[in-house]
Image (cartoon, rainbow, N blue to C red; front, side, top):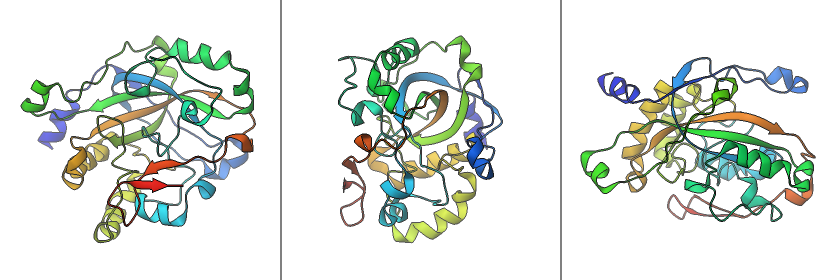
Length: 267
């Protein structure tokens, strides 16, 4: 508890979270994602696809290897290998050469204006999201090396109206230790029994405390990517186009797979 208190004591400006509900036509899927107020440091914004269907794009093998809970709506993540950015999916959306650190946008107004100005977005279903750094646990040596250097942006005044999607556990490059670092056979049953109940329909933690605990475990489980951090994902606005437009369905991803360590290639 002392370690957790120390981590939570490092948190920045307050972001007020509210419940996320499914669309009206899927009201049976409604559930609370999070209802707490959690502090976080703003690190950037992105536009993420919402046209890919989880049951189509995720094979059973991939689900078994990467997910602790499979009865979900769609896995969301800081990691674009898990939840693709539209700028990696759609050739007509070539972003500026520099838009911010970690391939995130550092200005919310700029990304919104960019998307509004591109006619192709009228054929797409996407969400504009904000990413916050909720906690980090640097050693003195890591701080001296400046590893990792994460941005710190001004928090927009309207952030109190954003919807918390949940918390991911990822490294300094936003690679997810929750949904993109494969679980070994000896880990799967134990981890699912312990952690599945803490994950929401987006395969994100609904509360920050279990996410902080999972971060510490992931540091030990995947030392090649440690230290990991807890990130908050917030829905800012939705772009509702033709969600089933086949032009944007299908991509080749680099991710983890059985038989090639934790990291390989998915088609």
